[in-house]
Image (tube, rainbow, N blue to C red; front, side, top):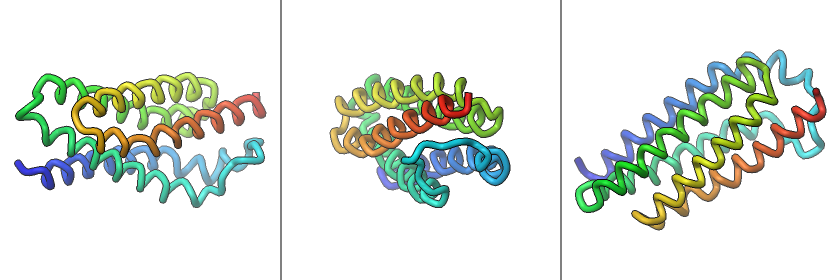
Length: 158
């Protein structure tokens, strides 16, 4: 399997996770989320879909580039991709906790774990393919911002 196919498979997986999270998110964005008190730095709702789409694309390219090294660095790649999959699952769980269960406090605890797992994935990717690691930096930054936003929403609405 060549590098392009690996990136395409990773893209399908990442976008599928994003789509599944949106199924939980969308109804609450229209009903529950507007009722919350939000901080002044809360972005407009329309910004989230394009940002997340771009982040899922970057994540997929990063994972595909790491996966492409499976023949030369098998154990490192397997471990790195395991961390990648764990953080991807945590990514989806956050939407369920925040928007599905409408529980910003539990989502805050989870997003901290998510950020730590992304960071660990970044460290593992760095040892395999530096470009892959760099592609995760916007994701790390956005999830850090999302954690601050999540914490602010929890604080303002507790």
